[in-house]
Image (tube, rainbow, N blue to C red; front, side):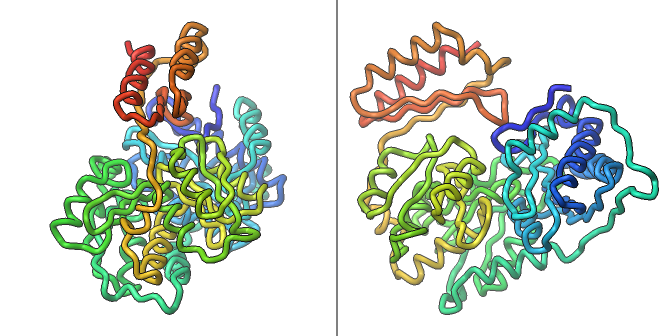
Length: 438
């Protein structure tokens, strides 16, 4: 059994990788490791995939066999589980989700008692135990399971508490696309209870339609609805609610770089914990330049919100994120939270009395082209001929950069090229992608 943690937990097809047997073993192994670290109870949340109930039962059995108590949260955004692990104390959290992938995949994300992704050291210990014997603790020491029905209400109240009391959403009309995922109940309630008129999209999950032509990775429907409804904003979340893109009243999509720039621009204090921001290797060069012109330091982490969080902790800073829409506001939350990030952006714009386009006109993105290429084996990237060809393309770029990396969650090679000329970026990205095609 060769199961490894990637950039965002363990993820893969349910029919071949994230099977019930695998989840039984993950629950047992994780229970042993995290129990040794002092946590005797696990909170289990999930998104709306049809496989969630099956995998939840398998994980539950594994944890109980390890002597760990289980509290079942039901469908809840990943950041909601992270919040509850920290709020309820002395517990760790697990989310059954494949984030922005389709329903054929599922995955496991684990949070420590501080509400942050578990360490790589803990992941390695779990991986090592996956191939061992699955031996339950003595019967008298088995864990117990029960449902925790307050999870959604507690998360809703927390989200509302992050909006400053002087800010009112009562005049706002907001299109909210929940991607038929884990946010389908809680996020509309948050906005409605704050007084906004909510136009919901993607709130009818059937187990199969999660992320299908909707959400943060496919915001076209939300864009069109913003224009049609003359809404003030659109919010598009992904299947587990840790990513977000925001749409302005003109239908323009604001990605993670834009969201971070608005939050950085709105922040009056640029010292100490607010003296710097963390992006990733994918962050646009133009964004980096714009952030520095605002007076901030800027550092890049590896791709993945876990790496962003680790660098934020190392630097002692409070704001970081990815262009994909993982935004970590560490003054409020311990992990990427799409709903919280959207609330903070809208609140900032209301307090500034400024339109997003007005603020974002202060910096210019460099043309960036991204191509994802499906492959049978991601190790193809280490081929010497391919590496040589990529380096030759890099040397040809007078301005810009090239990033070619294996996906941490899918069998894909991700190609990114930035250049001061969009046609140049497009050509080189296609040239590199063609090396992996077929």
